[in-house]
Length: 102
Image (cartoon, rainbow, N blue to C red; front, side, top):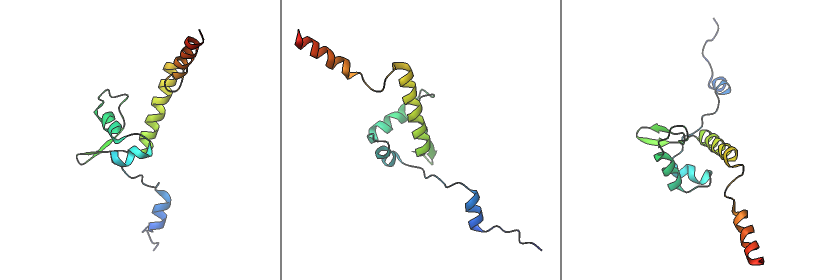
């Protein structure tokens, strides 16, 4: 009669590695923001643009891969909307140079 039990090593070969849930304090340094910024993202209730999280018990927890994907989506939306990355400080600097030259 064949052995129908599966070994632990064969199960591990089939299942993908499990990603751990992170707290806001653990997530913040990984994405180079302050912990308060992560807390502010949690308070946003606009649905589409809200940071992805899961409740584990009563505590919000994050999966790094989901947050990274969300950040990339927000970045691409801003590039499409404004046509650049980040604030346009070069215009102010150029204007200041022109004012001083005149």
